[in-house]
Length: 347
Ligand code: FA5
Image 1 (cartoon, rainbow, N blue to C red):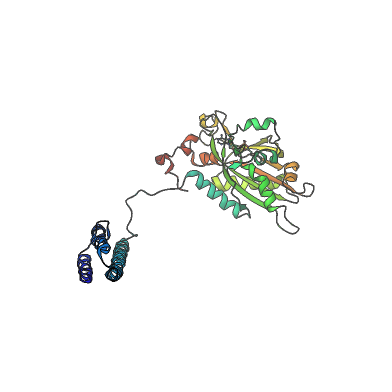
Image 2 (image 1 turned 45 degrees about the horizontal axis):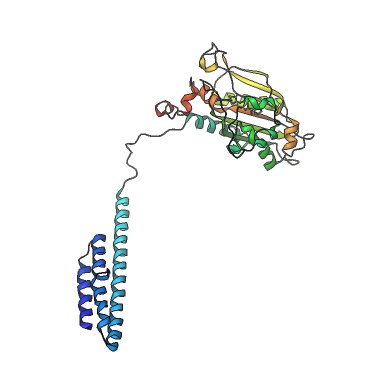
């Protein structure tokens, strides 16, 4: 009987030597170890043997079974390694320096102006913070001095989520968090200067200069003796560096519950030169950069001593700035994903 085991071993070794892929290996496994396989068949003979022979044959056939099983596994591993080696070899032959036939990508115009402004403000000592898009009602409204039922809430028609939170309507929603994170500057430290861009959402009627999803860029400076002169200085630097040419602006009083005094800084429409067009709703001016001195209540809610510290804040309309910078007549182009239109802007 033991001879039959030896025959099986030989037959398996010969068959394994001829295997060249996974399918053949699986067929071989079934032929020897499957339910109707040669090894399984041999094991059925055990019941016809006397005790002594069963003990000896049982031991040897189980050894053979284990040997065949591990031979199949290691053969499978070897084939897999060979395949990986082949793929690595092919990857080595790939020349990454050959120019691609795929068209090149480009940065979105909003990203371009965002990066430029971040560069300008970083060079003046500002740190950049990233405001989250889903906000609490408290951060978006209460913490910036817009209590429940305040009429200012109506100006920012809000998308509420089913859990009571909301999509932030303005970047000012991060003011409280940033004040609490950094606190007022300690004695001898420079003022706190932070820039925080972000996407905002309002349930707007969309037209050439209003989107329901648009970008703002908020800036804040807090310290002892910060005044309107500081605010005007930074606004001037911002506009002259971004536009690299003279642009006409006007400053007028503006009401925002979180600043006192508050201002609206409008830009003379660069699409029509102030003549009036759909982009500026025929007024010749575009609201671009509201700003003001931070209201003492807002400082207080941010944990900052409003008797000792003052600060300014601005909420630049980044999407509109991109429109003016690149003379884009309709805001809808910016969220359109129209690559033909968006690819033209390079710096
Ligand atoms: C605000 O959102 C205030 N948080 C700004 C602010 C910050 C004021 C700090 C004072 C101090 P306002 O709702 O006006 O303000 O929006 C600011 C700017 O965002 C606008 O001037 C405009 O340029 C831009 N903007 C507002 N709504 C839209 C819209 N639907 N589509 C495109 N741009 C918009």
